[in-house]
Image 1 (cartoon, rainbow, N blue to C red):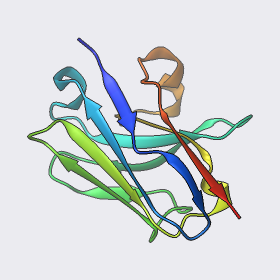
Image 2 (cartoon, rainbow, N blue to C red):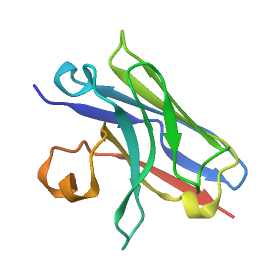
Image 3 (cartoon, rainbow, N blue to C red):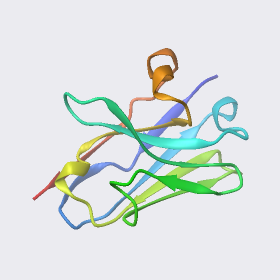
Length: 119
């Protein structure tokens, strides 16, 4: 069964921190490179960070140095530690396998988790 369950979002003030978690079904997690994405109201879905099975990471310039992606392969879970949050980080955050933007409309997505950062 395909499943993605994101959690850990909330409302924080600028400068605060949150840790997001994503429990994925084995069919999605497996040996795939996993990623976090976000979508702000009225905007397109953007890639935030991704991590391969061995733990190599990559980040969008907007979050580099503030966010850390990690994964627990034994638990089929991927995490996103977000520090020094800014109002522009406000969005619904989703996890999934790492894919190109042209595929966004063709795959299963979980419900996401809302992150709201106030100034």
